[in-house]
Length: 103
Image (tube, rainbow, N blue to C red; front, side, top):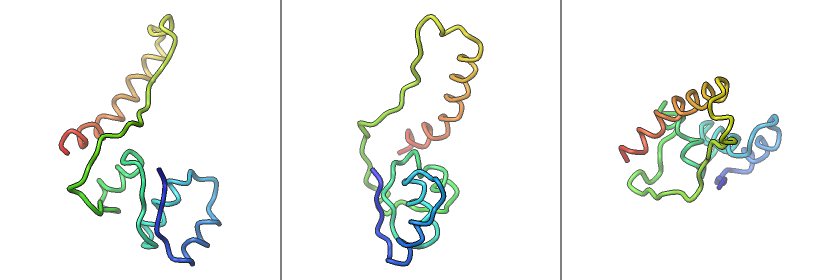
């Protein structure tokens, strides 16, 4: 889910962005003071934690039906490179998971 409320001049600036995901562009517009962004919490997590953005309705939250899965063939589970990637990915997700658990 990506969306934003932005003034016209900001909308024009958004059309001139590099090859960035739409959600990153919307978040950057909000950081730059061009409006309000609607984004997945995982995309906004770092900006929220750093204080670049704040939640408009912090008292409202809901579980998402969207999820990411690390998937691989069972016979490859013991490959060192796969285990290293899986371990790194889970380590990177820990700060986000802890912040979600706090509410």
